[in-house]
Amino acid sequence: MLKDMLMPNHKIIVYAFVGPSGTGKSYRAQYVASENNISYIIDDGLFIKDNQVIAGSSAKKAPTKIETVKHALFQTAEEKKEIQNAIRKYKPESIMILGTSDNMVHKIAENLGLPEISKIIRISDIATEEEMQTARRIRVTEGKHVIPVPTFEIKKDFSGYILDPLQIFKSKGLGKAPYVSEKSIIRPTFSYMGNFTISDSVFRQIIEYLAYKAPGIHKLAKMRITKYEDGPSIYIEVIVVYGFNIIEVLTNFREKCKKEIEKLTAMNIIHIDIVARGIEVPPRKEE
Image (tube, rainbow, N blue to C red; front, side, top):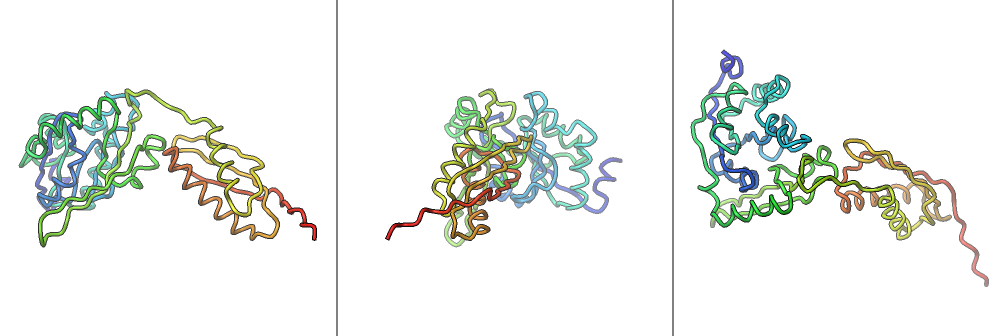
């Protein structure tokens, strides 16, 4: 009955991509989907169309490993409803579910009211043993996980935990369009590598250096950091050099601060306010 309610007008073909944790499934997910003409992927709580997250939230945001598994299985009514609504909206012809075992992917399909899985693709069919061992070593020693979407899709959700954006380019042979995909390398909130914090003094040192290098800014006068779950909000007061266009100086400095802080700390900056507190008049040169 649930399946009929979920898919009243069309039949969805369900695929699964299965392999042990840390063997490179998410890294290869978009490629495997592309090779099988699948545009929709369900991976770790996310419903992904091509390179865009269209529903759900990453299970890797959960505070514990157990919670990530529960979230990835869509065990709560709220989690199920969001994905089911998206499936009704987008009407995919096929979906690929990622999981660590046959039992897991079958459970996800059942929980979401999807048809029986038609085909299971295994990581061992796609990757060599050496490649899987390398992926496992990186997972264990560095705590790195891959999410098969561009960094901008998940940046807010993983403020401070994004390690690196990644672009994959793979030739399909002469005369064929190459496979190109963007992915994000993150360290989950439950990482066994431990938690970390960035002190306000780090932000201040970065901003002071940028102020020192910025044309039209004499010095940093005041700074206040307010930290939220999604990232920090920053308030800055500066002394501007007389003779410069104040609006232009502040706009350029704000953009530079946001870019460099996000680059150096991997934090998602929610907001930056910059105010000109005063003007510094350079001393006249003696004739």
